[in-house]
Amino acid sequence: MPRFLLVSFDGLRPDLIDRKLTPNICRLQNAGVTLAQHRTIYPSETRSAFPSLVTGTTASRHGMVGNKYVDRATTPPRYIDTSNAIRFGTGTARDRATFERGLDAITQAYNC
Image 1: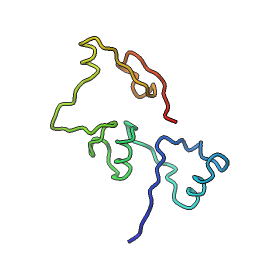
Image 2: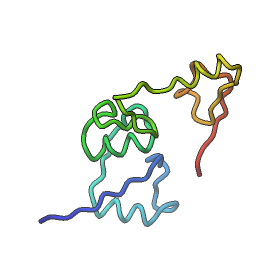
Image 3: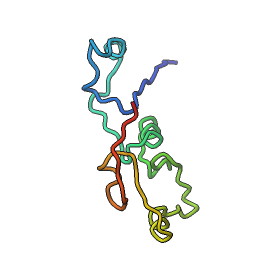
Image 4: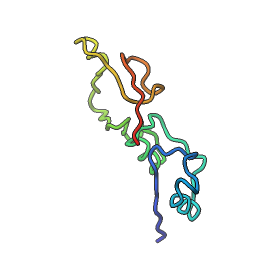
């Protein structure tokens, strides 16, 4: 039975891989196969993107939506609507494009 090793770097931009900065990653890349045209699904959260990568399906099929599992037998809570009703502010520390609509505050944040 053929064996393979799938290596995925969550959030690593391809332009940050070069021989001087990441020599070991370059060696690994040259010894294997690179998915140069691979694109993530939306939402591009870790727990929804990885199941899509290995199953070839979208979040609506495998059930991992964002970083939470969605049980379709229950109605998901509506946090933004609820917080407005009880006068809590809403915000996020993520990228602006993903969560811009409906929040009171947005802070750019990166995991390094």
